[in-house]
Image 1 (cartoon, rainbow, N blue to C red):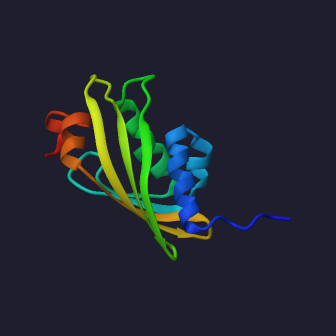
Image 2: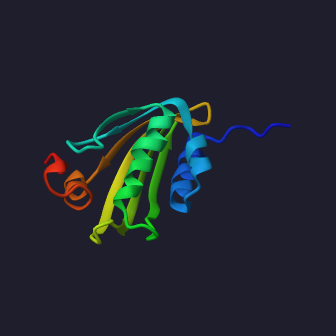
Length: 142
C-alpha cells in the first residue's frame, strides 16, 4: 500500500527541516521538476530560478560557497501557515560567511505545493544584509 502524499504544510515543513539537516536527497525530492523560485532584489542570486535542478544545484547549492566551510548554517522554522495549496513559512538563517562575517537573516517564503511537491516559491529576505555580508563590494549590485 502506498502512503498518501503529504499535505502542503507538511511538505514545506519537511523541506525546511531537510535544509536545516543538510539532507540533499529530501531537499531535491521536495521540488517539482518544473518548480520556480523567485528571489528578490538586485543581487547575483536575484531573479526567477526555473526547474528543480537549477533551484537545488545553482541557487541553493551556490550559496554554500559563500559560507565558511565546515561551519553550520543554522536554520530554524519560526512560523508556518497554510491555506489550501499555499503555505507561508518564516525561518531564520544564522551562519558565518567564508570571509568570517556573521550572517543572520530572517526569511519568509510563499510556497505553492501541488501533488506533494513544491511548485513555486516567492522568497522575501533582508537583501541589504545579504548584499553586505554575502556579496560585499561591487558584485553586490546594490
